Length: 113
Image (tube, rainbow, N blue to C red; front, side, top):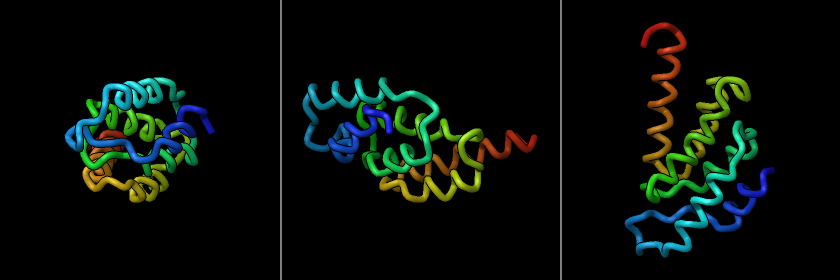
């Protein structure tokens, strides 16, 4: 597993930007770690990332997590495997966003988008 993802896992779930105003040091650490992720991630790494999503966002950094998870498609996992994997996301909002994006991606791949 990538060191950056192991460090994120040790930090625990990413805080929301609106929840108790995380310190600049916390935001900077999350930003550094998200920038250190090498794509595509593995299925195991994506499973860890899905446990770290905040309820809302942390200054755009949750989008970086989502893009890392999305890097699985289509070379690492099938769309069906990806759909099952994203169901484990701890944030309803981000899970729904990933489902919508997957649906749109599938439509485009099938020539319907």
